[in-house]
Length: 222
Image 1 (cartoon, rainbow, N blue to C red):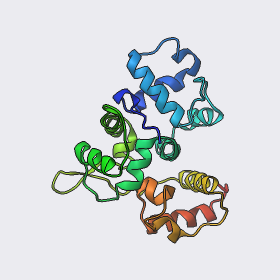
Image 2 (image 1 turned 120 degrees about the vertical axis):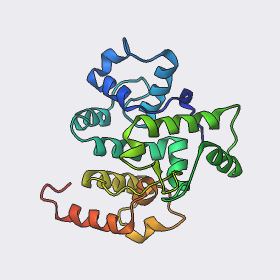
Image 3 (image 1 turned 135 degrees about the vertical axis):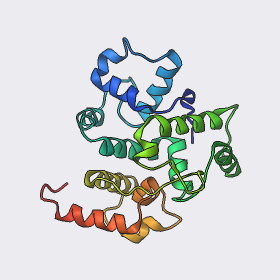
Image 4 (image 1 turned 135 degrees about the horizontal axis):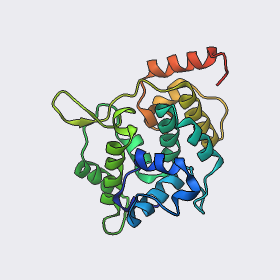
C-alpha cells in the first residue's frame, strides 16, 4: 500500500469550500501555498472528488450540491471514500476503536509494528495530515474521530448522528468492494471486518440497527 503523506497538510473544510465555489477557476487562483495545493490535490483524488487530471468527478459534482446544506453527509461520504483510498484514514478507521486513547507517537509506533515500511518521514507526515484533518474539518468534532475523555486525553469517540444517506452509501461501497449483495449486522462487528459502518464511523450496533430501520421506512427510499 502506498502511504500518501499529503505534504503534512490535512483535508481542510475551508479549502473544500473554496474549491467547490468554482472548481475550474480554483486551479488558476486560490489562497493555498504550492505545497498545500499538492497536499489538497492528493486528498481530493483519494476522496474521488477529482480524477487523475484534477477534473471534478460526477461524485464531486453531487458532493458540491450536498455541501451547501448538509455538513454531516458531506463528510460521511468523503470519509467513506477515503477509508478505501487513503492509507492513513483506512488504517485509523480499522485500528483505533471507539474509546481508544491516541496521539501521533503512539499511532506511529503501531503502524511500524505492523510492518508498514516507508522512507523518511512518510508515516509521520501522513499522521500530521490526519491530525490536521481532525482539527480543520468536521471529521474531528462532528464525526467524533477526535474526542476528549474525562481525563482530557484524546480518544476516538462514537458517532451517533449518521445520516440515512451516509449509512446507505457506506453499505453500498462495502458491498461493491466485497462483491456481495447480502450482509448481516453482526458481520460488521467482527475483528476481521475491514471498513463498513462500524469500523469507518465507530457507530454502535444499536445506532446501526436504528439507522437501518429508518432507512427501511423512509418515504423517499434512500
